[in-house]
Length: 391
Image 1 (tube, rainbow, N blue to C red):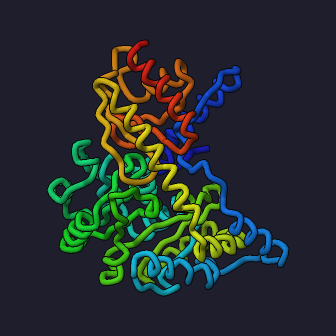
Image 2: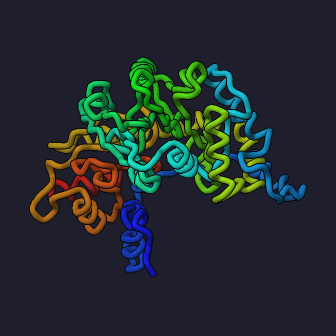
Image 3: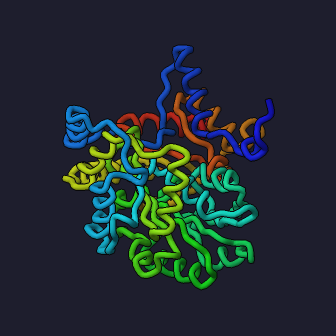
């Protein structure tokens, strides 16, 4: 049997590798805490779960239209109007099996073999592999910790060629928690439009932004330039529905049709009962988001203060999501010369699982998730600090 070359080029998930090592140590009887997980530690709201149960009781268990049931597509369009004032129609939306699926469909719909895709680094782990699976070429655009890991027009311009077709933006960011102010986003969008570059704006964490930072989005730019941008969202992070697998895309109707064609030949519709639950989520109430934001901002400040106290650590203060991405290469040694080996050392000696920065395109860094209980977070960071400083 011969596996396809495109799949052989794809890299396995680094986060899954971390989880596998953690499970191995747990099987040996060791107590392991994970600061690697990318999901809220809050339960899904009761009214969402009740909507799912009602759908089952009423026999809503059949196939649905591929892009989603009409009331859910309308609820998605209304979401952008409610929170950002953008006018959209149901036909501008499609529901997919999680934000990852939405992104994959977009890359497949937009990229021809050899097309280049600008990806600012640090980046979410799956972007480059998705581009490669679509037979495109990922072009990594470096950013700096001093800028909060935000891309700027100068570095994007330097990476741009006549083969550049797509730019991926992510705000708030996984892995850095970096968040683009609206003016910064608008500036980049105007530059991309002038170059004929399509923007995929990954806004999965859009409601998890911490004051004094303000919400930002490209959905208003999309309203005026629907052929130049697509907005990806999800309920997984903002509504604590990671396992429900609801991803959304706001796009030009022709692009929605193209994504529907791809989805019709791969997964077809999202789980029918989940779609009913998603309608309930979009319609509200949204109390859980406010509750999570208070907790996450408190935990961010706790973790930031501890990490910043480590001599040699450089830690930009994130304005969104629930991650910190400190530069920790000052602690690398001959025995632990990179982020992967350092994460292994921390896992074995401190019993805390983290994700190496190499998975996100910056080997100087390590990703910390603060989506855990405050006291667990505090104790875990203290243990990590002891390992780094050889105490």
